[in-house]
Length: 413
Image (tube, rainbow, N blue to C red; front, side, top):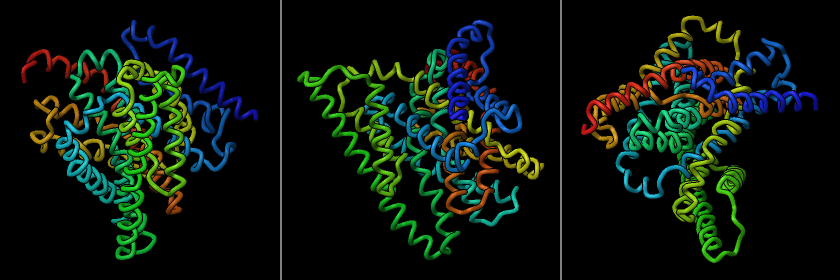
């Protein structure tokens, strides 16, 4: 019980301080990434710091971190699904097909190649590590595209592109992760067959169908109740959280991809629900981004495998630098003409750089540890997550202002 109270005091105090102190820090012209502050808080409170709280005292650290990350990603993708206009997916289907097709496959293969070159692992383990760090993190992406600074400097078309990609590809990374897992367990032939029949046909396709059905029915019911005044006024925040937890739990119990189902359900709900709710949906961003997402970064800080990182040496440094530079930027630059919102070189560079790696990678890394029994996916992925937090956290504000100046210099491009 004391550990629970320490955790409540630590996380509640952190959210309170960040909520009250953000304005002061902005007025002084200095605002560090809130996620970086949360990670440092976890390091300070964890076993290498003051030893106030340790994941082992809450249960199996891998299981605890996996479940906290799973809930956090689910909440984040729901936030994105509610923020995007209902007709966005149909209108930009061609762009999303490019981003979720060739671009995402490139991101997987490029990350895997870096892992294979820098780490002493087999090809299939490298493909697993690459799959774990493939998805664009919805939590960190939200911090880049949400807020006054982003609204003033990043065009809506670019913000929506980053959000939609981050929302969809977290669930879409699921088959990339499970292909190497099945092959490592069963060999190439049997593994690929199991991957097609189980992962693609049920866990992915089933998640899309279930999520769409639940979200559409919930949205239609909300619209009907609202129009006929059958129900009391209900906060979009309450509905969003309830829908997220219900879909995540139900679809996961059925053995399907819960994260993908949650995003599809949120999009379907947004398509069918009362349009007047969109205004309130915009107000839940701060609650999502702080109260529901900061705890996982505190836990991440407590779980950092410092000794294993040190054992990697320069191979670990090369892994981080290689993935950050090669995982995403070359694909967006090469395919910029096929991605509609990218209408200038500055947009290609901005979108190509800001594909942060975060909570989604933590979730898939801990899942991979549980499925394979190897700690390597967690050691490698956690190091890349830390590198992404540092690199993208430090560059988010200056590059956002830089991009805004490019837009002002040539608004017609």
